[in-house]
Amino acid sequence: MAEMLEIEFLGTGTSTGVPVLRCPCPVCHSSDEHDHRLRASAIIRYLGKRILIDCGPDFRTQMLRASDINLDALLITHVHYDHVGGIDDLRSYCFERDFPVYAQADVIKDFHQRLPYCFAEHLYPGVPKLDVHEVKANEPFMVEGIEVMPLPVMHYQLPILGYRIGPLAYITDAKTIPQETIDAIKGVPLLVLNALRHKPHMSHLSLSDALKIINEVKPGRALLTHMSHEIGFHTDINKILPPNVQLAHDTQIVTVAR
Image (cartoon, rainbow, N blue to C red; front, side, top):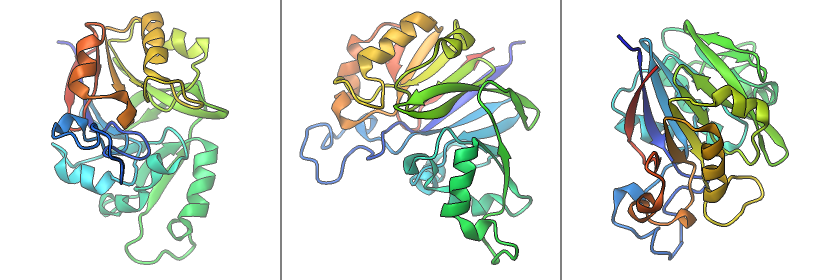
């Protein structure tokens, strides 16, 4: 029997979320819940474990509406606030043990600066207790018995990570993707990839950029995430995308076989 992986999209928006505060555009005033996007994050459920990818400032709200609130570990893609701003809310997951967190060295350094109270010699009662592990690009590692392949990509000039777990490759905030990463995910059953908007952007893939990557990778299916209000209406854009490509939406749950 095929091993099934499930991904639940906690958020599919860019750093501002959608609607954007004070924005008068039609997308920000849409009544369609598919156009409402919290900051990008997802839970991967695979081989009995639940792995969170990124923990942004909407984390508490996202978990209150998630289908299953249990988590076993956290993978961080990069240091920007919309991907790490909810770390303090992990305190609820630290009662039984120090919560495992996997990230590159620059992210770990930022944690010590942003959350010094989590790493003090004498911890204040109730602070998040984190079991932090450094990961490096192109060096697979184990999380709760599951092999994870870090996928190096560039967020403008910042080296960041996507992750491949079984039949899934998850990449967000990429602007350029090196050939070695393309080769590592070719033919993957499910690719999650960022697509900020239609116009080019300095540090994010546009929709046309993302479609070019998808055409090169040739995944079984692709879902787009980390989208701004400038992407347009969810329903309208999905109508013009290739058959195996869709915009993901908040709370969406997708299963894929290995």
